[in-house]
Image 1 (cartoon, rainbow, N blue to C red):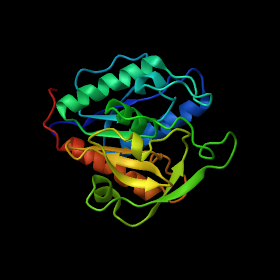
Image 2 (image 1 turned 30 degrees about the vertical axis):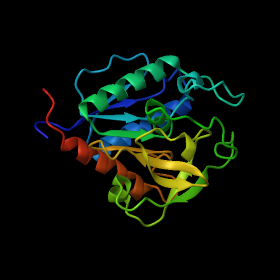
Image 3 (image 1 turned 45 degrees about the vertical axis):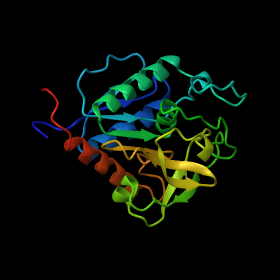
Image 4 (image 1 turned 180 degrees about the vertical axis):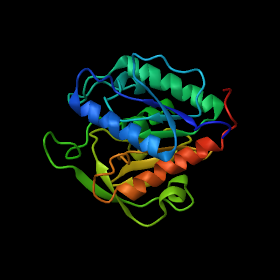
Length: 233
């Protein structure tokens, strides 16, 4: 795509000296870099570049429930209002420019809310403190962009989330591409050039069964960004 690699803005949690957040950040940046991106990491305190080729919305804090018209559940964790605002603004820019978008975990939830959807504020057993990582088996819907990346054979995914999207809360225009246990595990907007969101963490290549399927998602994302009209350089 012109000179250099496609530039992706990756939104992240503010570190605040948190070792877990630092490791998570490293996983995202490594996966995006390995897929062929020039990565611009931003959080709610960062200056965002005017020009970029793709947007990756990553995992992190719960969204403020008022953004989807809900009262706060006792099990909903504190939100970062500045991050909510930043990601919704960046997503609006990406949709206006028809840039490729990948949503991961919280990122899936942000996209759903931006499309007018709602969230299940707590799912028992999906992310227990100090407990084992829950694993599931997902199957991508035939003909979807997720299937183009991962194929239609079942593959393993991890559950590191306690909020989720149910069928009844899916935003208008979004199409489910994987379901697990009554929840939407992945979706896309078929009207966009490339907008895919997954509830699991494909960047965590050390988790069982995830390495190859996860990297195929990132490579498909980078390929879509490389096919975009070249940004001004």
